[in-house]
Image (cartoon, rainbow, N blue to C red; front, top):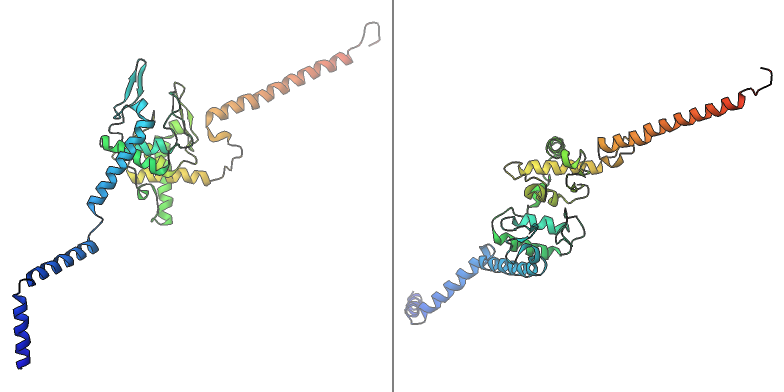
Length: 294
């Protein structure tokens, strides 16, 4: 009993010592920092610094490859003939990801329409350019995969979505892109591109941002699940064989009517002329000559 009392007395004296408070404070700080590092989410300061670095990298790329047409700050450039490069303020990261990711930008030279080609920038550089343009003004962000994919749905739900997407596509898109997404001609030397083989994300971004002559289908007008259904329908047409034989590019009644007129009716007209000329030659050979008996 006396030993316990002596030990308690010693501990009590050490607690009141000059270094005890400092030691307790130091242990408390270490414990607090360890718990915060273990359970806190990603550091906001690190994320902010990473975003700033990404924006700075994007600005450097922008000044080299884009500023000549779009201005030093993305404000656009006008020439004597009109708009040389449109303003990029407010177009959002999705527009940059579509235009640069499909190789349409940067353009080699101004023209009626930017054509899809092999992309010039890497995925990291495209991300940096998109971050910089997004910093110029609020606009549509790059969509997440869950927005344009039907993953997680049952087979029956996917079939229903594809059916719905086909109806939406036939209602809103076939006037330009044709009934199976093969594309078609537009006024003033422009055209609606083929949608076959295009990445799902880029199709979603095209509907979201309305590049060039395409109208904008915002998420308020066409909900993300409707966009995903349209994309699923287009991808289903790529895997469906053409049971009708030669589809002539799937360009619809114009190409089919021209084929019928030139090949079908043209062949019939040519065959009719051949029959007529063959009949005349036969009559000449069998006609009696003068002075002979009939």
